[in-house]
Amino acid sequence: MSDCGSDNDGIRYIVVPELVQINKEMLRLTPGEPFGIRDQGGLESAQQKPCMHRYYTQTEDLATLASVLGMGLVQNHPFLNANKRTAADAVYRFLLLNGYELTMPDRDIILLWEGAATHAYNEEDIASLLAYWLREFDSSSLND
Image (cartoon, rainbow, N blue to C red):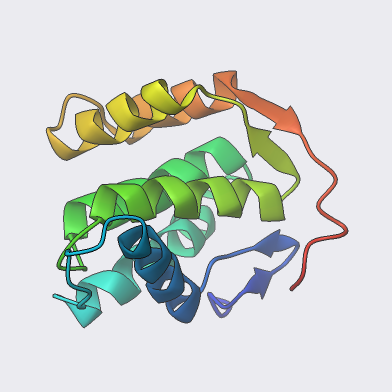
């Protein structure tokens, strides 16, 4: 099994410090919500889920891997606040890093992650919805 770092055999992953930064960015948009990591192990688990899923299922499907990342963040609830918002932004960035832009309307993104949190959607549902709204994106200009 290879390392689940930022770049793994052509797929670029979001690493834990980036997830923490995304969460802090989300919280800056809503002053008054405190930052904190509620579950470090849950955060690390969510970060590694796409890489592990890829390894064990032998999938290269980026919508599936993005779904696994988002669901891991929503279900593990590693932060004190903004877990769904962090999941939405992390998924968006993960897809961009890997050459796809999510074009789903903002309202639908909100409903998607609310549905994930209430178990109205599972990983397969989310992967299908993400795949529908993807378009190719030139990620060569993005920083590593």
